[in-house]
Length: 102
Image 1 (spheres, one colour):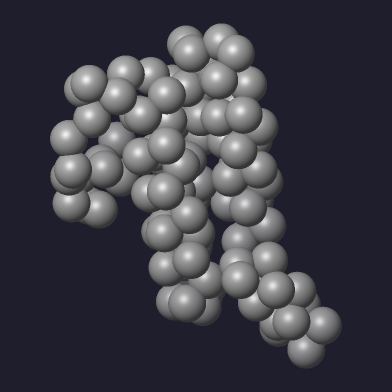
Image 2 (image 1 turned 60 degrees about the vertical axis):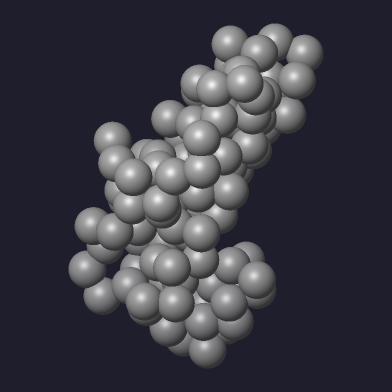
């Protein structure tokens, strides 16, 4: 949904101010998460990338709130997945704001 909305806005002449950078950070986090299944310490890199994407989205001026929300939502999912890979026994359900706290 995030990619579709960003592409739709770009086609409409409303570039999603700075959102592509946040999406690239999410992309890196996804790749690190995938690699962490074979190399669990890489889950921390996935978590950091997701947190960086959420922080970048939050600090964008003029970005559409729905895009910021979608970046943050995706980041939360990646953080939770990275925590499961890193140590499922240590995973505790935490509120979104706590998950995204750097």
